[in-house]
Image (cartoon, rainbow, N blue to C red; front, side, top):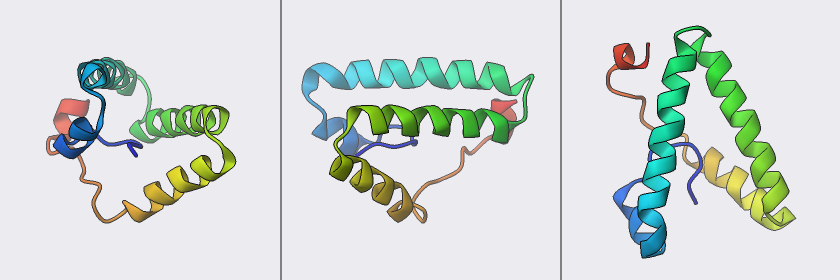
Length: 91
């Protein structure tokens, strides 16, 4: 389940073929917009806002079990989430 990291090759392989390009496209667009917002607002404000929106979208679109599983996936991913390499790129 993808939560808040750039789609990996494994994620893209699991995605139906007609959706992998779509996923990469929306990721790139939202990331670009986020970088623009970080020029005006603190990074944590932008990240927190994106997280709040994402969690509400998941809560709206998933079953209770699916929502719980998604949150657990986020928690279980703590050690494998990597920061962006170039923090300057984000500002």
